[in-house]
Image 1: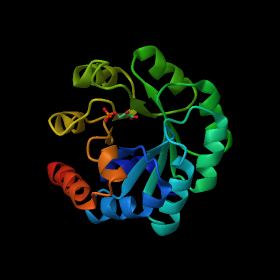
Image 2: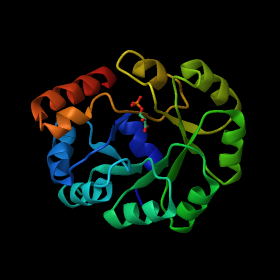
Image 3: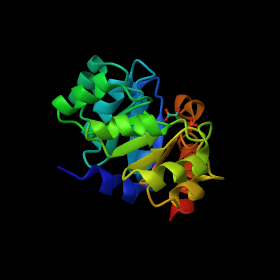
Image 4: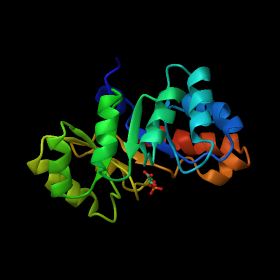
Length: 207
Ligand code: 3PG
């Protein structure tokens, strides 16, 4: 099995996607790959999420694909069936964590304070989403948590071109997540060139 931490650390920025129409998923995946971000966290905020993951997986077998905004065990099942590499939840939900562990799929749950980090550690987790990053204290909070706990973080929520390098410079940060390079309207309108140049800008910032 591929090592998730290593893959996240190599990729550095995870595009967080809400896709309304799964028929656009393959083209979107190709634009991400061609422009230097071979990764997607497809959120279950849209009905087409599982189908989009399935299409991306079939067309791009080597792409790192996660399911985001996973809130129920049924969504975990759907995501696994569609072929995800990992699951992300916005908060720390022990039921979801346990279920992912039972099903042997990596889970990266959201935390934003010391108590939640400790509860996640108690369940054997060491890779956590720091969410919502900016409203929760940003880089300063992340540094404070990292000084205490031997865990790795994926900050998401308010990460942008102007602060992504600050987050990535914190040693405990594996990768940052964000929606800014995959705006829904560009996907809806199939503006692939514009989307490609946003993705390329991120790849340039982090290279
Ligand atoms: C997420 O689901 O991780 C967040 O909605 C992403 O936050 P952003 O839109 O501020 O990048």
